[in-house]
Amino acid sequence: MDAPALRHGAMFDTNELELNMGPQHPSTHGVLRVVLRLDGEKVVDADVVIGYLHRGIEKLSENRNYTQIVLLTDRMDYVAAATNNVGYCETVEKLMAIEVPRRARYVRTIVCELQRIASHCLWVGTHAMDIGAMTVFLYAFRERELILDLFEELCGARLTYNSQRIGGLPLDIPPGWDRKVLAFVEVMTGKVEEYEALLTENRIWLERTKGVGVIEGPEAIALGLSGPPLRGSGVPRDIRKDEPYAAYDEMQFEVPLGKAGDTYDRYVVRMEEFRQSLRIIRQAAEGIPEGPVVGKVPRLIKPPAGETYHAIESPKGELGYFVVSDGKSTNPYRFRVRPPSFCNLQALRRLCRGHLVADVVALIGSLDVVLGEVDR
Figure 1 (cartoon, one colour):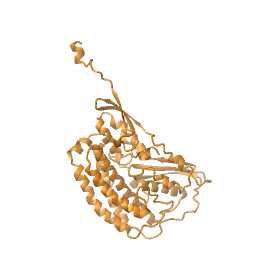
Figure 2: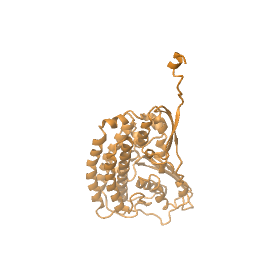
Figure 3: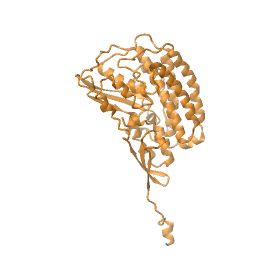
């Protein structure tokens, strides 16, 4: 071979490599398959393949009555079951124009924020472990157990709670539960600082997250992102502020925002959300009003003919329910979920391009998806 041909690399095979990551890969956080096209270690393109769970929760819900559906919602984002319950119950309450007692709305607010912290604990532990930091996982799960203890005392379950009812709560809070919640707030406040001491200024963490997966605000909006991935790109969209539900209109809190829109900013936003959630819980637990915990609900729930959409701010983003009633049946005519994990996952292909294979696990972790919700 002559020298010019050698200089231009004609003797080497430069075809791109196609590599399957998942669906049995621990860092894909469920049965997610990402088909990577690689040029060496660099990701040229990524095809995100979903649908391995075959769950059919929407169709199942159309064949159950309105009360039975509550426990099906547990099974979508199964690490944030309580927020699923609240979102669904509030949708039916909106459809039926049911007024929820103020005490129940305060307890719902506490439950939602406890669930946000528990979900973020699982996120920061697994996200850090994906990138190579083991200790944070052990720290975060230590505090998550305290929240699960509170949920167990409240409703008897630790993962799929079935904790809400249409019109309010199934039962009032146990005696002294609010004081235990406040005690947890005091403990957790110091623990967040421990997480940050391990990660926020850690040079390895900075190398693996700074400038990785940058997405600017307008593009994040165009892709349909919500929750921390959207706020990490500097877009101040938080349903708790913009369209308050439960008792959020009575709470004082800030909406943390990122600037660069990279993996590090999505981490920083969630860390600040820990503090804001604790702030909300303290206000709600100290101010729980007296009174009933369930409104006036007919024994047979049969909403009038019509349709409604209602969304809440779940730990992952905008969780919305669309329910259609024909006015005749005790089952919804149409039941549709707008899951944040599914919508946020749309950004993965865009985020992966141009980065290394090792960055893919960091990018999946920064979106914080749960495949039970994606494949609902």
